Length: 534
Ligand SMILES: Nc1ncnc2c1ncn2[C@@H]1O[C@H](COP(=O)(O)OP(=O)(O)OP(=O)(O)O)[C@@H](O)[C@H]1O
Image 1 (cartoon, rainbow, N blue to C red):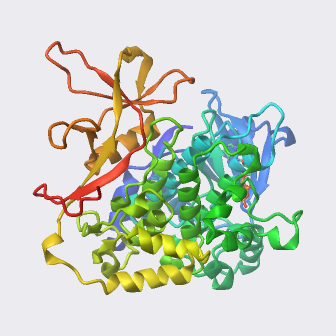
Image 2: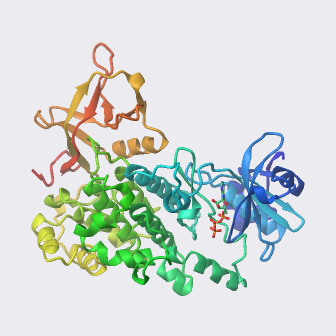
Image 3: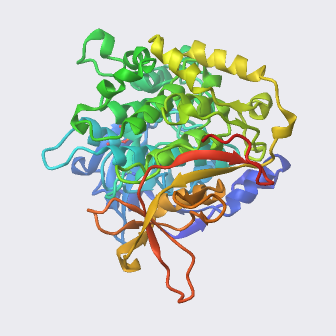
């Protein structure tokens, strides 16, 4: 069980030079079959966690460390040669993110191929959502949004942070594992090249696709044309499951309700019916705005046309805000200017009654990076225009809904022909938010900096240059960068705090945010207000 740094045979060739460099740094453990047999009590039935499309999974305890692991014994048919297997495993081994199940090592012994993962203690999202237990409380709204946010971060890592990007292919509630703190970890990514179902094993592939039918993007089920946007579709289905508590495919329901997406599609256009979509076990304990935005995000993700689905990075930004949404004083408004793809901004603004009154024109070239592999250049350079309130109201009044594919297409067309006012072409933008807060006497021992997920939120706050402005003071007299956000360590206190610059006495003072955040106006680099909203 020694840690080994493996160098595949092909690493000296030019073609694989970059990959080889990365692989050189990969440290995975290699195991003998005997070691894993010992860990799993000889693959005894009592250690069997389940069986999936790639083989059986056993819970095991490694000796002598006592580390608890999940051992996946890959089915033998469709097995690859040793070198090919090692190369694939090595590329999986370099993936490392808090929201991905970590590959610890592997075994390639004779014709045995096994993968060894960190054991994730809390079961899957499928278990939590669809297999209720009397000793387990139903998940509340915020927890659901936090799980969605974490899963989006894991997917964003695969899509946007590793090179080449990894298409997940099999995202579903049973592959979202949860640790004891309900932090999500995606499992089963990148296995398609290892197990059955590749090359001439199309029969096996078909059965896998059928098995995950409710999650598969239409283009995949039609012809197997997989892209990053197919993953976004599957993500949308998981998000819908979180919102509705319904299974992706449920044959126990009436025919027209069996497929979650088909059931939800007609409802997407009618925000008044969103509360009926929400999981009844939530007992309406969520903010209407949060629900509207979550449904809007899900509806964007499960669009039939792959190119109109949002990037997972945009989904992640939107969910970062929804995952913080609490009843008292926490921002729920998604900063619409943060998105790399404007279609997300439009969809969310149209589902957000408060924002519908604003009219913003934005050119945010900085946020459109070269790593944005799927957005068209045109789309990134187009101006994001928020419709005036009257537009939005007149559309929702006639009951025709606000988020159908045709309407979004219409939006895109009208947006791209909108005359561009050169004067307003800002290179970077500040979004000013209006908060009200109260200074509170609270000891910093009672507050924690946000946890790992929350620290990402912090970076979003600072990265988008959000400023707060005291309600009672004229603008520009008091601006505070909302960088240091804290939560209470006490479960009873759901407030969000931020700290001020230390004063003369070097004491940090804390403020509790009282009301929801509102977009006030946007500024360009020079501080000129482009479109005052109020
Ligand atoms: N790292 C892990 N920690 C804890 N349990 C795991 C781990 N990996 C898999 N499991 C559990 O093992 C069982 C089988 O998992 P597996 O991923 O092979 O199948 P699946 O997700 O049910 O189906 P599919 O292969 O079609 O995705 C599931 O119950 C899963 O929750």
